[in-house]
Length: 409
Image 1 (cartoon, rainbow, N blue to C red):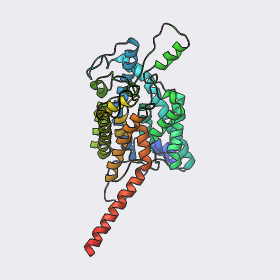
Image 2 (cartoon, one colour; image 1 turned 45 degrees about the vertical axis):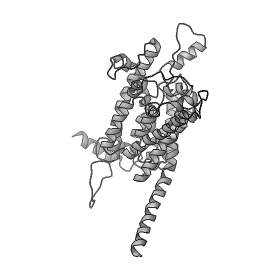
Image 3 (cartoon, rainbow, N blue to C red; image 1 turned 30 degrees about the horizontal axis):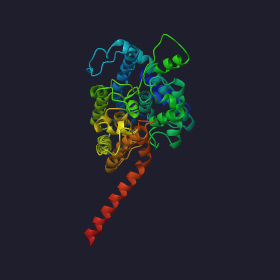
Image 4 (tube, rainbow, N blue to C red; image 1 turned 90 degrees about the vertical axis):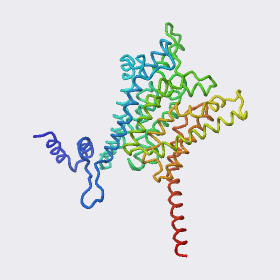
């Protein structure tokens, strides 16, 4: 008896029971979904929600592996004090086994906790409500470990995942019904509930916080590790210590998977090629960020902001550098394009994306205590996305009625 036949028999055994949704989720992971088209459909395609989620995960995998290498690289560079700016992307100092093993030992637990806790909540709600387990968390479960600091405690991550899945998704009806991006809801919960673990200069490099605590307690024989991010340094008025290539390749401290603009760009091209991600939202987000950056540069050039201002460093940063630092690129490609929470109309996508980029840089500059605005910008625009689509549709209706009246006149 084949494995597929055995699974089919088990499916029939669990049919109609409370555990049927949980078993069906496992059974259909590598097979067809339970709901398929029949009869007189005009278009039949092989894609479904599960395959769509898998494609997004494929686009995230390079960022995940790079984050593992970078976690080890940043740790050892900080401990040994031997960071060399301007390295090649293929430098052996970065791509070595020690860096990977160190990073994997810290990143993989984040991935495991994210998936185990998140899917457990999904299974519980599926069993209670009697509906099928939805595949929406497959992407959220991968996004969450990539947008948090390397040393975030696992229990904090578990609590945040439960909050994000229940409050950010299930209370609205599950996958396809939520109004806020679940991954960003989880990160927002972490930021506001545990701010000392989500900001500052001791959370972005592994063991930096532990060493600082040990030194504060009077420990000897160890050195402090500085894990200041590019945005953190600029927000404090310090000079930029990393080269453009460091920022573009991703050899900088930051959230696990958000540092490499190069790999995020490849992921964007893959999502656009597979027609999963909206190129309109990505492009308009970049345009919005560049426009806001140009405005700030113009303000500095006109002398309206002096060097004594706490906003000067970020305002005077080259407008296009904003695309390379922080989590802007990652957010614009992987989270602003969420098909559930983003605008649905083509014109609405241009407006939505532009405002995401524009507001991201505005928050980044005007809130030095939290010099990363993409999370708040996307969540804000998630709320306004239906309103944008409403007015776009109403505008189209009014133009058509106007043309109809002119034709009948």
